[in-house]
Image 1: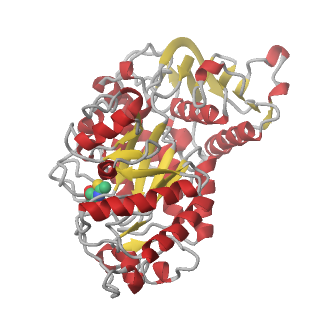
Image 2 (image 1 turned 90 degrees about the vertical axis):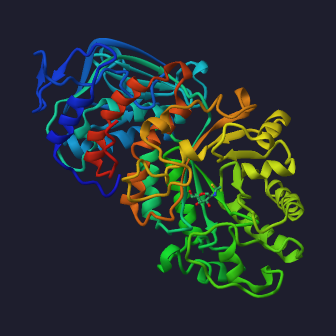
Image 3 (image 1 turned 90 degrees about the horizontal axis):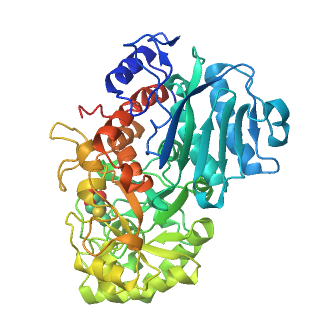
Length: 537
Ligand code: TNX
């Protein structure tokens, strides 16, 4: 990770001491100076179950493992992906421990060393699925097993949380580097666990997007939806349409300079995301939220006149010209280029708040655009407004409403469409926490951490249950957000709440347990230099 700063570890431990109410029995305690201790009353290291999102099943044991200067990291023989994941851990731990931590092939882990060191192995049972993993800690070592590299990466995220928070710092720290003993067996409830970043209202450079990828992947988020266009800015180069970025990308909310990604920038984001097992979902919104494109090309407007660029925060005033053929040749170019640059399965086509497009024009528009997405080999996602047009069942609807009933979305689910749950009053990370929150908006209400956590995505929207729910997403709209510190303040600690709803089994849902495990994340965020809202909850 980049840009880390280390703040007082003692302050972190104080938060830890205040926040921890151990679910299991911890067997080793740490004093505030970080020394192993057994005396009562001292803050204890976490038990192996103290992970966010909560694992499916956990067994605690009195067998902690301590990483030392002798520790070797083993990677599944013949797997470049497993080696990459082993290197991620080794690189991270070398920085803070100063230990050599060589990464070697798993065939070297045999004889008396058969369970020594830290191993990433791809021989887990098939029942773990693509993303599941098992993590076992005994006094000789740590073993993470999975079927697929994604599972190893998810297991690595759990292991990182089980190491002392100082391991997440940017400079050498004092140990000991002890991991609590026992086993975890874990796999996700939903396959789609998303975050969304609005890079249109305010533009964020590649480095900010990459840092956000670092942060979301800590909590096993596996999709990042990028809102690449809106009234205030068009943020990706489309060959053949240069004004989109030179004009449409030249400003943002408040009139700042805006910016845009070259296609090489976008490819760098995609590759960075892939190395974190995150799939990018690019969104080009339409027919509404399109002023930046309309300002870039007069021909895209029904009256042939380009409107001025827009730097305010109103919604619902712009529309593509539904009756002009150029609208669809333009979108064909956009979607074909985005599809070619995007290895993931989805292209998001927006479709929300088309208040300046008549219902019949909206129907015509979506009827023309949806086939373009399949023409280029992708599945379309759209905001749930799109369910009004009876879209093909391959289309995924993203529910952003504030009610628990939406007849169009329920009807789409009944026809077979999948739904991603992002209810604005629960999952929108740009809603203020309380009336005192300076950043953000409040049109969907105030969302404290408990509000973000206490709902069930599998049973929230009437008629949208069971296999209709593909997963969850945490949208972060950026009308009021200027930089990474602003982004982090709104996402932490609510993003981990949403991540737990997406990953953890419904049977583990428990506010008290979550709040206790969440409190232990604070010192990690401090060590990583992540700005967060210190919720009194
Ligand atoms: C609604 S939700 C929007 C966005 C705004 C957001 C602000 C949705 C699909 N559209 O255009 O940025 O509210 O919270």
